[in-house]
Image 1: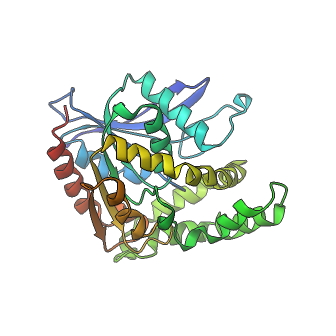
Image 2: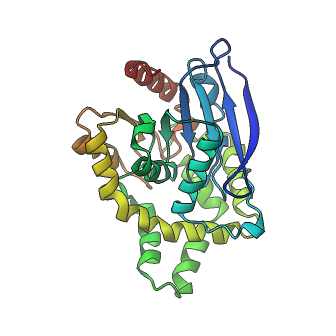
Length: 295
């Protein structure tokens, strides 16, 4: 079993990016698989998946700014948008000299990666999307209050407060982990407890509200993401928790419109399918990557 290390690297004008990395014990030159987390989590969500994939691949999972243990100096005046998250990710990859990689995307990790794909389409060798959406029909019921937030004027504090009180809570975070799961009692409480604690750090709630507001700009980019799929025909495996209320199975099936060879597997799980279906996801991922014959 590969050992997982935790490291930091300073990139993008002072941002200390925390990341987890593991390599196969006897193959230091193994192809890279990048794992990009979602809301409200961090690379911690991949704590069980990393060792399984690292039997064959170099696996790297960073924390985005505003999440996990990545640190952004206040003097940096960082603007928390998906454009900024993409810029930081690009700087992170450059600092580690990663120019070619397969990628596992989840939730927020999807638009960050796909924004990067518009800039560096040749860098991405394959995509595994686990509830990582790129189609409007995939936006589920959980987005209703956030869509109202998008429709409100920028000065409308009431819509912002509605999201704050109904979405950015410890109870909602736990629900995102447990809803739709076959085995909710098997989900380790440190997962949603850690997420909720980190969300409540000073200033972080406002960061998350800014990102919720900015997510509308990802939706506006969906046509460009879909054009990237059509032009690149990048190999893609969609592994989807079919009971997800954030990103519904329609979003998984939609990949086939632009990527006819896309593989879609619907799991009897919710949003955080990896918490209870980890072994199946790892097996599907490893078999998919083996078929791509990555170098």
